Length: 607
Image 1 (cartoon, rainbow, N blue to C red):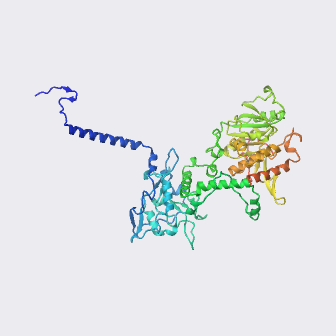
Image 2 (tube, helix red, strand yellow):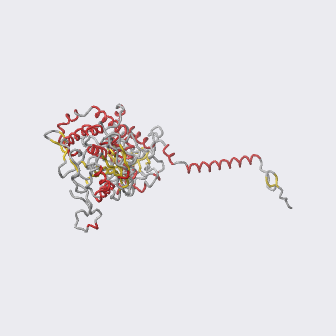
Image 3 (cartoon, rainbow, N blue to C red):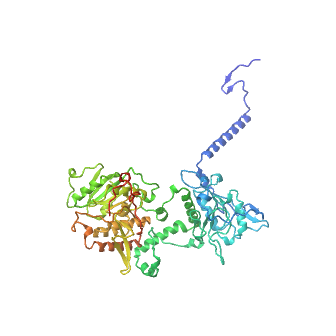
């Protein structure tokens, strides 16, 4: 018997039509399967940040509802703790892996109630409110993950903040039972009170193998440098502390030998400076001390910086985030690598009326291989600069900028024409530096882009008889300043000098026509906490053409005023930021009995 292949609008005639209820059933089943597949796909490709929505708090996870875990007497006990642990020996950084955000992932163990064989808890207090706040802060942060396989760092839900409430042996056994313990590798414990009277400890006594410890009582014997994290001891009473809303400022540093004079020193600080310090204190309090959340996040940020050092926060970001940011300028404190040699440096020559000497300086500087541009700051409003045809012909761009007022601070203005990171500030009478000396100075700056790198060095001394600071230009074994008559520095400091110089220092410099170099040394040392770098043997700048009429440094009152500058600036800064060093930088083969043609910098000048 044959059947025809006739089609109808409902499909082939040879397929019998389903009953209505069966058709509805299959359609419903197909819809459910389809929706399941869609939901699965969405879950697979959903952003990973969804995991941070799982909150860790007492509201969501009751201590009483947590599963009970009994610790057998024979449970293993971790080792006391390896004092030799460092990040490269006791921490598996490969577990952290690479991620675009350079952020570690932190896993919090599920809450459990640990008791011994007879049912006695390992802690007399259980989970404290402070530790719950800490865990909740972690779970609400972008550090948190609920996927144990993605975790770089593990935080137990066992509260060891206060050692006085713990049973030491049983707490150690509970830690060893954690499924990912692995001798404490990549585990972080928080402890603020490591012990009480009569035997005060400086670190948690609970045996913890290789676990990191964020502790609030370390001594130099128990703190593992670069591994543990030193944290403040939090008090719940601090929540009631009311501090005035103020902006950031700086601290007072008093040498040990001046402690008897502390009262006099503190009384001499201007009220405005005191207010700035109070504002800085408020910022530190809010950022790092005010809550368990602040303390916990700070500890994780420190560990994160150790694991991803190339993306670590800078000294300035940790201590005083800048209020003003310039989009076109990078701070040398933020430079992760040595600046490339190819962009070179911009030479900024401050001049007034010494045309012949200026042209000689331009000619000599143009011989330096890394010179990218030469900028002449014309500081004479009563006389126009020479015609373009009269200027020396050099291979790099030469630009003349005319100023509106005759100010020494004009040399440190952030001119748009400065496109390189490196700046060479140089006077129009510095004709004695060789191209090798200048090139070597630039190479040293590339290694230390946050420093002032210069030639003649100067020193500040404390005059015990006069009870004040003194400027010293004689030959000594120490250096705390370099003259900016010829010095390399990062152009970022031009912005700081022009817009962020403390007090009235900039106006004082312009009014007295002196000490702009000392002011720059103060500024850089205060920002970086580092000394300048003196290069090559040069100790003096000699200017054959200069006379007492046009040479500022030859004025009889010059040296006295330089000492006055140091005392003035130290008063404004509220401290003495200058750092003293006893070394300089010379080319490696500078003094070696070696053929000159094989040396990189053979033409290094004399004293």
